[in-house]
Amino acid sequence: MKPTHIEHIGIAVKDLQDSIKYYEEVLGLECYAIEEVKDQKVKTAFFKVGDTKIELLESTDPEGPIGKYIEKKGEGVHHIAFAVKGIEKVLEEAENKGMRLIDKQPRKGAEGLDIAFLHPKSTHGVLTELCENKNE
Ligand code: ZN
Image 1 (cartoon, rainbow, N blue to C red):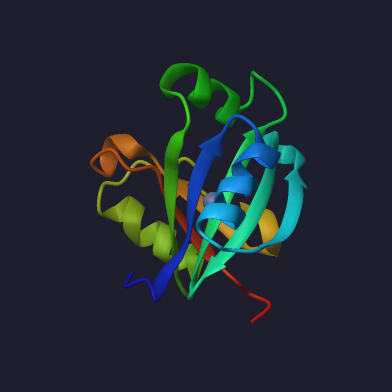
Image 2 (tube, protein in one colour):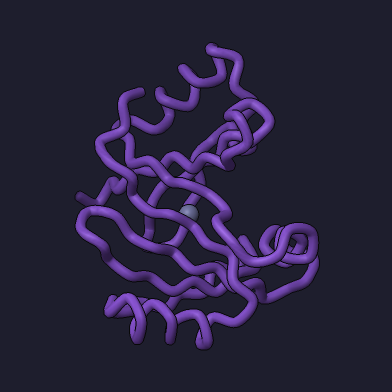
């Protein structure tokens, strides 16, 4: 598949506003967008670090994926997202190589990207997101 870069790192947090303070006041980054992704039951905040972004994820529902994650593991790195070209084909390729796909088809994520996840059971413990910006 050969990703072009790490698109973003997803980090699960308990309190978005409180976490934004750390990224802005300590790291000196600037939050340039806050977006709710209803489908995923999260509110996200974005920061740019070079070509890579930090995506903070606060759950809007304890039963959502981030709500459950925080309950089990607490705050921390949740997933790594690789930017790819031709995501449908990349997914098919990954499946052919024995990867367990969480999304068989890409769906819309934050910032209008097409995204799909590979299950951490087949990626050595890292929830892996593949994403493609088709508006580029
Ligand atoms: Zn993500």
